[in-house]
Amino acid sequence: MGSIPPDNVNAAARQMEDGNTPKELDAGALFVLKSRGSWLHCGYHLTTSIVAPALLSLPFALSLTGWFAGVLCLIVAALVTFYSYNLLSLVLEHHAQLGQRQLRFRDMARDILGQGWGRFFVGPIQFGLCYGAVIACILLGGQSLKVGLSFLPIGLLAIYLLSSPKGTMQLYQFVSIFGVLLLVLAQIPSFHSLRHINLVSLVLCLAYSACATSGSIYIGYSKNAPTKDYSINGSAQNRVFGSFNAISIIATTFGNGIIPEIQATIAPPVKGKMFKGLCVCYAVVVSTFFSVAISGYWAFGNQARGTVLANFMVDEKSLLPTWVLLMTNVFTLLQVVAVTLAYLQPTNEVLERKFADAKIDQFAFRNVVPRLVFRSLSVVIATTVAAMFPFFGDINAVIGAFGCIPLDFVLPMVFYNVTFKPSKHGLMFWANTLIATIFSAFGVLGAISSIRQIGLDAKTYHLFANL
Image (cartoon, rainbow, N blue to C red; front, side, top):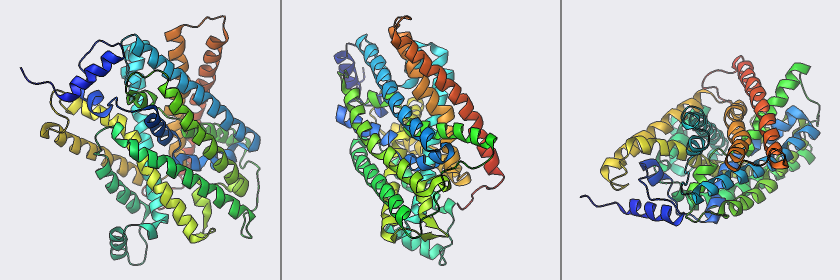
């Protein structure tokens, strides 16, 4: 009889602490979703996955809706997602107490709605959301790298100067450099291993949000300030589609899509820990999202671009002191690395489950080689797609419509109602039903408008465009 790996013993012990009957975990759950973190670690993971550089696109979202509708959407999205994530956490805690701790979103769908929901609906949607977020983050990383060139390590700067003496390097080449960095970091073994990186990420998101806010205010009051026009551009039809596109962008910004996987990293007992982590996260959300969105839209009005950092330069000349622009891009670049690693975890979990052997040590040669090969292949594919389609704002909208809205605004309400069966005569049932119905409609309309926007941009942009 072979010996049982220590991780399997620890997994069984953790399940028993939750009141679970010990059962064999697959390699994805055992190796990637290790349950060893505290509620504070959970707060770091949540902050990294929600307060991502996508928030820099919020001024653009407001430019599609105007002041009142835009700010209202921000407030509603903040309230609904905080409520939604708490419902999801309560459902997870309930099943853990019943002896069936769910570690993944598809596990929840399978156990609550049925096998087909997890395999054919929630699983593919979550995988698409997370992998789409990875692609968008790699693109944003390449864009930040392009602007923050002088802050690159000496070795990379030398490569750039040797390969392109006149400084005519294209965006796709910067995206590729960022992808090479991820090839190394993607090998970090588990979600829990990211806790220190995500603590730094929390500080960085506060830093670049402060820089973006200060930069917008500085430009708004400077002699080079753009004309402040808060009218909504385009025909009536374009305004309607633009509004739904903005809703998708805002949904993406507040979206998470990996709440079960984050809660899976918490050491048992899990009760009450997720709420504390969410409080940490939303303290950062409120202080960053609204400041960046309002200051950026105030400064640039309907000229706000897909990411507010793009408004800080005109004709390749900085409207800010150069060191401020570079520092902002460096902070963004470093934090987007952490965000990318967080959203790679569901992909890593799927790969480990299919190609690793849970019966032997995680770092055995038999497990290390497939991990190295398939995680590297995952990063290469994402980097290639990011370089080919450099339309960050459009990608944000598509991710929001197809991924964030179903997973973050609809399913948590459904899971709660099915699990706890609140009275149909009570407020809870109808509030959840109303939220799920409204955002289902927004998801459909957002999907239509985001695909339409990509079609419009396709007439202007081309593959591997240097934006």
